[in-house]
Length: 385
Image (tube, rainbow, N blue to C red; front, top):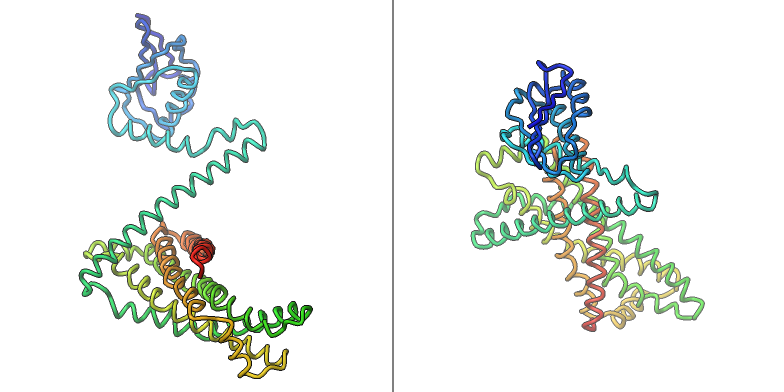
């Protein structure tokens, strides 16, 4: 058995190799800390394992190790593994093993492949893969949150007394009544624009009267519910995420759990219920205001009376045209509520995190609303609605 010691300063920190057949024992000792980092770097660079395929790393004599010493050791272990050696840690305490494991996680997050990429195309592929992995993880976490919300809702159905109706009514007022002025003005102007543009395009074919058909079908089936959902996502969804996120920063959510309150029942469920009740009513109101704006434009631009507008609208739309739009509203409400509450509860502990997750709640809500709207359109087209 041979013993080779690599020591710039044996009293501070040391490392030595012992060769025994095919296995090589690397014994470490001393204080593996930041103060001895230069010593450790020199020891690791000069340590000779003679190309052994199996290395036993013995930390029994290590008096202390911090993140700097653990990083130096982890980096050397990685070099040996890249060379093809098999590493086994022996006589390692739980604290030492945990610290080395954290160094491995931190090393993976640095994505060494980016430093070894073969060019811009390879780097782009790596970044795309990282983004796809992140999206998959986010989708998994969101689905888990949907499951937790479903369990909470089923528990509330079985025991209605757990539902906070006062909080629900408060949110209904904020989501619905307070939003009527801005939503009504927005929908009215959209109706005016649709009527003007539709009449302008149909005039070339002498079919201006069918502008009313265009208005009725597009507003009742798509535009009304889509505009309302987007506005609610931007106005209410962001408010929900910011409110819950601020509570996370102030540790109010933790305080709720400490006194036995379930944040899902206290914060999430009343907001979801309020959205599910209010959004269909807002959609109906937006449809009415958009049709009113279109009627004004048609009467002024096409010289038609209000009675003619109503008669043509009755011929153009049916009850299922209105139903198609209203069916989407509760689904969009649940999507907006779940995403906004999920992002709020993800806030870590800073004002920057609140702003980041508030923005993400709006972006993700609008994205999901549009995706589900497209899916609804395909589904209703397949079944003939």
